[in-house]
Length: 309
Ligand code: ADP
Image 1 (cartoon, rainbow, N blue to C red):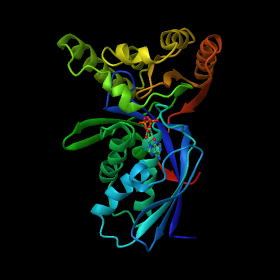
Image 2: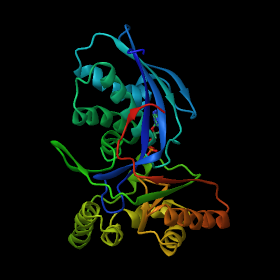
Image 3: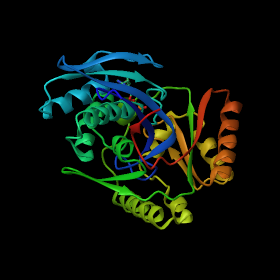
Image 4: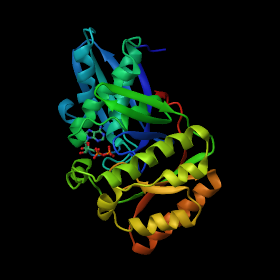
């Protein structure tokens, strides 16, 4: 076995999950990027291969490079790393494409050095990649990508991440209409103030969702998947959003909302049969509109980033 090199699978993630803007996220089992991280004597980080997407390979322009440099800055390791990235997740899709690369890089580096850093520290390094991608060092994609399952960022300062139980029968359906929305752009349209009334409704739902996940109470999960603050503003950027959401609920989904900053739309369902029905209903909307899409039906990934493909 070559201990200077590791192949990494890094899952796609759904952030926000309707009511939990910037704090809730979940990892997906069947979608993710692959990377190879290699220890080399030359200092610094080099992206030596990037397949599957047209993205910058310069260290300071690639989130894997930036996250890797944040890691090296705090490490006493004298050498450097080469990184190969095999993108399966489209950049700007809203399912944590940038987070997968940042997370995969720092996790792989940490494994090769004998795990000098904790998962919480790795989240902080990966957040620097998110700062490059979106202008904000948010943790709601990188936390579930590292821990797996559902995560709650209880506090950003100091960073406090809580892992949340994932009900066994919960499935996600995610449809990605083929338009690109940059996280940085979809942040610009958000209001910076909310009303107390909206706040009350929103934190009621965040509490309800977390309780529903722990209790495996699928009805409570469904009732709590409501976003009074972000979705009304952002959904305007996504063609057919209202129709897709209505079709998903009609097909039996527990709830439906924008994945991350969009344009992907996610729905949660109890069991694979309903999740597949929901997929068919969502597809039909985009077929009628005449918009191309990718669609995934996935179990929740409870393991997070791991070695392998
Ligand atoms: P997503 O929510 O799918 O991660 P973002 O808009 O947050 O989408 O991130 C995509 C942005 O990050 C794009 O501008 C892209 O050029 C940049 N980027 C830099 N390196 C990478 C990478 N390795 N993987 C994905 N995106 C990257």
